[in-house]
Image 1: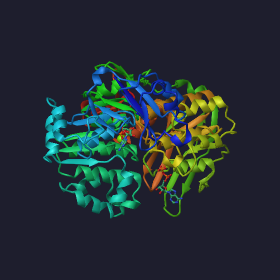
Image 2 (image 1 turned 90 degrees about the vertical axis):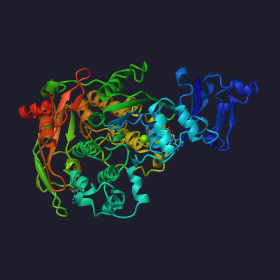
Image 3 (image 1 turned 120 degrees about the vertical axis):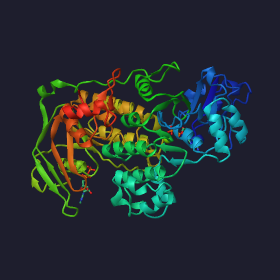
Image 4 (image 1 turned 30 degrees about the vertical axis):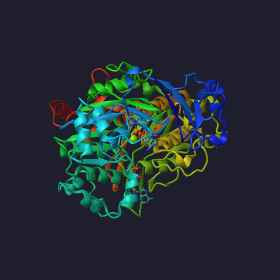
Length: 590
Ligand code: ADP
Ligand code: ADP
Ligand code: MG
């Protein structure tokens, strides 16, 4: 079985000479294997195509894929976005009384599956020509739990509650304050209680348009939770949230929806692990096709995902497994020469009254520091003082170095292509080889024809990280590099950063809220404590064990190590392990 994909966003018929048609051996013999569609883009016939692969190589924009698929997928199409468009195979199944997770790369079909189940999009079973009747859809799933589900969905007999992936779009269709938004969906009367649990009370009277990303995300999650529905769908819950808020929201969803059927898409593996009872993995090729696996227990599903091999499906999704180490990495760090040393300082903003107090510290050559702490605790302030953008109010920094910095919020305002943007960064002291080692694993070549203003959140993030690393500096600071990245991109990011730090013996500070990323990347931890918006304190730079312990103590959660993969797993709060670890003060490394 073979499918042909033409990526509409890459295909640029105005800038090529239809190489896909010109060089197709079938077209040359007079067959209509490639014809022109109404949009002047090619349509490749999957019946006539012989799979020679010439068009794939000849297309200057790499817009074409011809993919051989296993026969088992024949007739399993759930949805196809138009001729030569993305195909979704299989479907996840919501389970009563359980939380089902969806895990997979961006562009693999997770949102599509969720929208179908939420009744926002009718599946076409791969038939792109005509609308498919509900009767046919129900027949397709005969014998599975989905038969009953779609039957009820078609008759409007189930009620669903849905939180969309992109919360940024909410201000476009709702006018009013956060409290008004919540009042409009509050069917259970739990809005104020959840607002308190998610620490969002102070933002309730704020206009939706003025909420920060993290506030908007929490309001959106609450708005979904307080509907009285049979099925709940959350298309990602952690974007914009700091780690405290992530844990709180995960606990809140579990508590509020006890006994309901819930489905969650999530890229933060520690949070997914904590939330879900089962997971469906999605594999395939982003933008081309996605296959939904049968449900697996969460721990098994995540372990298989990390290992790169799906056992029941007998499918390899990655060459190499993702590995964790059980012990704080690279204990020999003390022997390394000190790379930079800063004095202690204090910074107070008169306008807001916020104070950051930092004890002196030093960073070793080639060292990667993890930075953890809530939002609005002074992380960016610390960096600005280091760079010299902001003068400390007391003490001095006594540091004069170049820092290449990727800020937390990035804006894609440049009206140029990714390729031109990177070309403009040349002459920066880095070798061609250095640059290739950064841009390739971050997926820049695949998006180089796109204009920066049109990039997705994840793509823009990758561009910003690559641009930061493409500047020659002894010290790199990346503020929330994992935001908007999927699991696979995070894995590649971790490898890239580690290799980069080691090869160029530069040091880094990586501020992030993804525990797995921090665990795999960091040699030591910089812990920011205090009260958000009021006072922040850097108590020091700790080894991983001490740093994680002090940080998790404040968070009130403990981690154990998964036996087979050594990945950190959040203990159920109040479980025997959790209590025992809290008592002995071992929050992280046993
Ligand atoms: P995920 O949620 O896993 O990131 P999506 O379900 O959003 O993936 O998208 C899967 C694929 O389908 C992507 O390649 C996307 O470009 C494509 N797609 C999504 N929505 C549409 C649409 N309305 N029309 C055409 N293609 C779409
Ligand atoms: P983080 O990076 O940890 O999210 P920041 O360092 O950006 O935190 O901000 C810490 C606190 O200082 C926040 O409450 C923020 O509103 C406040 N703040 C940041 N910059 C200024 C400024 N220029 N003037 C007044 N207050 C500021
Ligand atoms: Mg999605």
